Image (cartoon, rainbow, N blue to C red; front, side, top):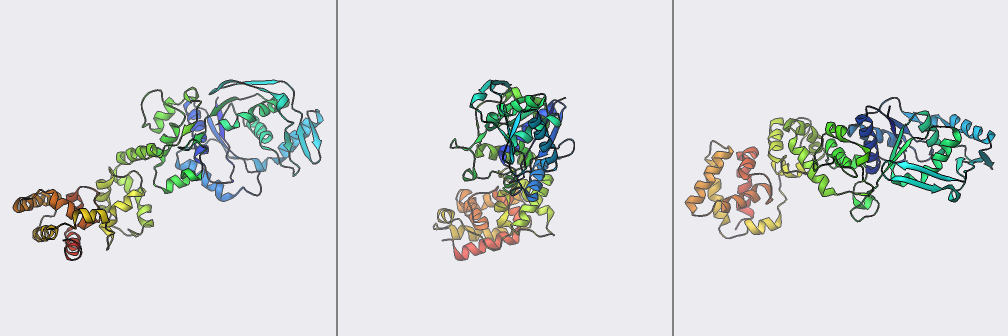
Length: 430
């Protein structure tokens, strides 16, 4: 049975590159009906923190990755590492250097077949004797990793290709300890748009940041899966079931993946559009509360109408509060370019005044009636409907962009629309 693991260090939040490694392991395990395990590499006593571990586990769950069996903590296995080092000392495969223990690196060619990169060979002559136990009594990464993978019965080690240089050292330790050597698959790293290694200067790097920025978990998982892997055809939107069904390590590419935020935004917009308004409403409520647009008690029907209106126009959940602010705010922030183009023109005040008078007498404030009324006014004034529509949009929303004007007016309501027209007629329009 396939058994793979993801082994994060709780010294920081879950990085998007680490999340992609976890996802490839999880997809491989689920595709093969195997096991996906978690090992917490928490032997860095000064940097490991519970808050980081909590965030890592929460981020994995948010992305939809469940794990099998209990968590393994390296900090609870120190006696095992020390006992194993003693065994190597007794077998003359290691030696003491002060308080530290070093492994005697055998001098030979070390070869392995990487599932992604093919045959790889190292000459161990160039490798130093590996430290197993540091002078503080704690194990090094390579030593603890080999013991844990062997005892957890890991069959495939799937990790970033920055670990390729660690592999010959680990293979030498597997052989010295009499352990079965697992298969290795080193996946390409994620790079920034400029080709350098992904960092904070490229934008968000942790999964929690992407969540806070309004990306959906399924969209982000879909995006991560396509960075360095493809289903073998042109499909770009793949559900979790599709990913599990089609995932194979043999389709992982050798070259580094580039994080393209435009692609992520497009994918996220597709997932948003395909969600029901009720599902989206639940996801949006925390963002609306954070922006103080709604409190604990709010008009769900109005929000649902706005969700239906704007879900085809937003790329992230954080864009929604910006779009609907005019429906709740008392004062508008007017886009000056839009004001100059649509409100600061001779005759606009007269058009809006007549439009306001017509709206005041309307008993039916639904979009069809509003559109008919607008066209009637345009005909009466011998102007194109756009001469009414563009200034009105600016007057009621402060922007040139948004949903259809008449849909906006219907949701906004007669009183607010007329109040805003009156303000612009009195203070802005020419």
